Length: 198
Image 1 (spheres, rainbow, N blue to C red):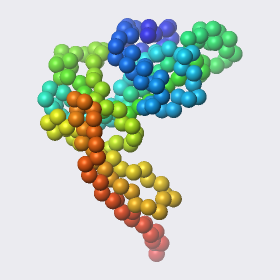
Image 2: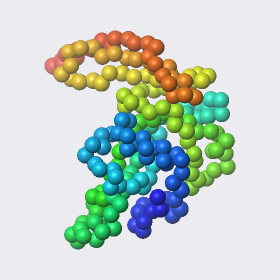
Image 3: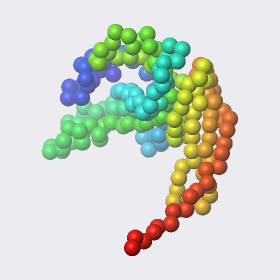
Image 4: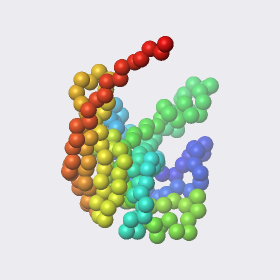
């Protein structure tokens, strides 16, 4: 996972390929959680980077901060050097790298131990622990209460849909990642009638 010259990294150092990276790599290759990878033969690719892009986070609960967001995993073609050298001149470096790399995304709820945050700087890598992947990919807000996370989900909206959407609440054990639906409510659609101004 060592970056090549020309790659954009905040630091030149790379995190070693550890057990966390192996677990994420295995999850991606199984093809059940991350975005569709059926059009890629990942046997020809190697893991390059794993990024966490948080959208929302909780207050400190029992020594942890919980975050919900995207886990972005990027792969690079094993033969990228040969393929880059064979590409036509005039292409931007970003366009070239796009042709030899592949990125897939999953949504995830995770947590960070506040002890790992103390005395850190902007350049410090912080370990985080995955609680659960969002298989629906459309969770809304969440709250943490004791050892449970309560997550809100709403059916996707389609303008052509004639049916009302449901709103769901899931209860999740933050230590095991197991969750189930505990509440469902019908969200009645409101018909908007345009009014012509006089």
